[in-house]
Image 1 (tube, helix red, strand yellow):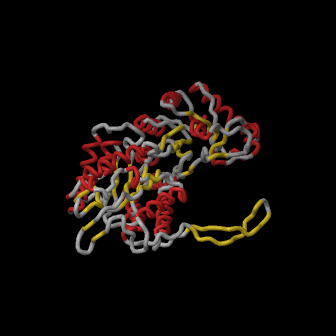
Image 2: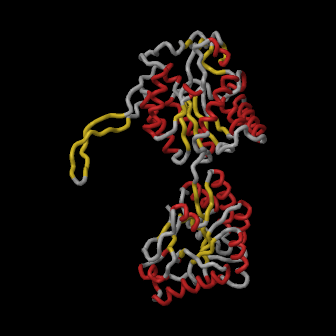
Image 3: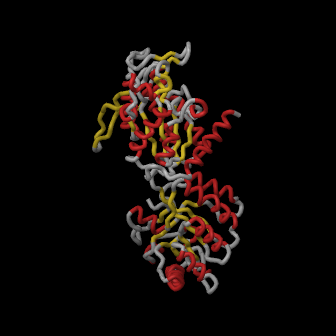
Length: 470
């Protein structure tokens, strides 16, 4: 019950602060940030002791924090914290901050090594020769092994997220009870290592695993070894390990200005594409959702469906920023047709599209994804397939369509859907998929604009068919 009340308090804290503008307008405003760590991160501090740095970051940068740090946790606990973050929010976070290491020092965890070394055969320009070789070590009983395991877990489970490591701050005395007495940092731990050695290892991890490291040990300015800095900590006599409210605030400002140097999230793009329209029912419902959420898409239409009733539908799609592309005249099995029939299936639809919206299509999605060299030679259009959900199959429920998209979509995907009449399950799925992908940081583009991210639309007559833009 107490934990639930704490969670509600944190949510209320964020909601109240989120209404105000952050002190610093930046890329971090509104960023959804997972925060993992130990007692200095633990949300329970707010309940009885002091404010915390991540709550200050709400005011300073406008982040939305998801906090999973737990007092006493060491580096090997971070994977479990990350699993809870993923269970609660899936991929709906932009960045993850990891503030860990001081308890590994206190537990006298040996530093260990990053790599194991041996000799292995290597191919050098066609010639095989023995060379020195290394593999990462993942021992749970060394600090570097733990860091390797933690970062492998984070980069596997959150491959497109910004992951940033924070080094431990300086340590003063911590007399937290008869069985929890910790000497200040001028003492080595039980394996002869100083806190500086653990700080250095975390900084090394940035290069080993290609993640940014913010050195709070240096930039926070907190130095508990001096009495003049004791006012930044909970108890000048007994606890110069944990910052108090002023200490957290100073740390938060230092952290905030460091974070300004890094992206809060990395851009991701996706294209919605729809086959077998247009019509005045399902296509219009899809356009209603696109207008509601402000997203474009690409409609691969059959020429036989373009008439006086559906031309306004295509014109509405164009006005919303959508592209109208070619899906053949009659949705026939193109490989069964003569060359002249294939050409007419494509060119007749080209003409109808241009007459309806004033613009020629640039892409062709062959019916049933059947294509051959002859078809490629007949048209200058780029052939498109896509991330296929089989949503033409009425036995695939709306929830299955949602799960397939959200569970498999990647940056650069062209999502293949169908807007034929009465395909209500796809319309229902889009009500969840569009806002959820927006929440995950995806930007929706037309297929043409998605290829513009790559650099250009592939040239014609190359025999290729594309499911991703890059």
